[in-house]
Amino acid sequence: MKKVVLLDYGSGNIRSGERALQRVGADVTVTADFDAAMNADGLLVPGVGAFEACMTGLKAVRGDVIVDRRLTGGRPVLGICVGMQILFARGIEHGVETEGCDQWPGTVERLQPETGEPVPHMGWNTIDVPSGSKLFEGIDKERFYFVHSYGVRAWELANTRASVTPAVTWTTYGGDRFVAAVENGPLSATQFHPEKSGDAGAALLENWVRSL
Image (tube, rainbow, N blue to C red; front, side):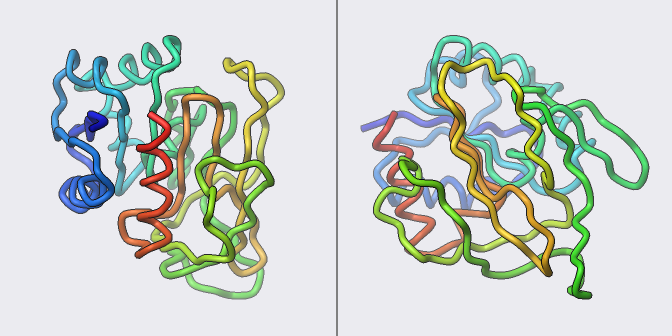
């Protein structure tokens, strides 16, 4: 059974994520312990709320260091929702710019739907998965559950720390296109909540756990 640490840094739907991982066969520990997070087969970084608050909480438990060291050693990390956003270089909310983990270049900014849809984007949406995706293997034409006001609207990666080409999954809301998921070697992330996305979300988490 694969051991997964769900990083508890004061942000995120911890219990729903824990239950979702347990349902797909993972041995889950919810903790902020540095050594446990470093030694687990997989690390899940959740996130709900403001980018700045999540980064403050993450740094308080040295989560940014954990993520960086795990990836340097090729050890898998999965970010969800704001846990995905903080993997990028920066976030801008209400005019305030906050530095992220900078695993990928890019800016998290407010969504700008062109057709008048309300923000936050809340509900089910289809996605455009690239060919060869391992995270979405066996998952076709499914919808996933989103709850967010901010996203990565431009993919700026010119060069990456990993030797593989990232697989980027996109979606649109009100005509506004943004990143829905990224797979980049040991680092994966989703803007949507797989733990709230029914059978499709469970299949995605099962794919990730199986890959550990």
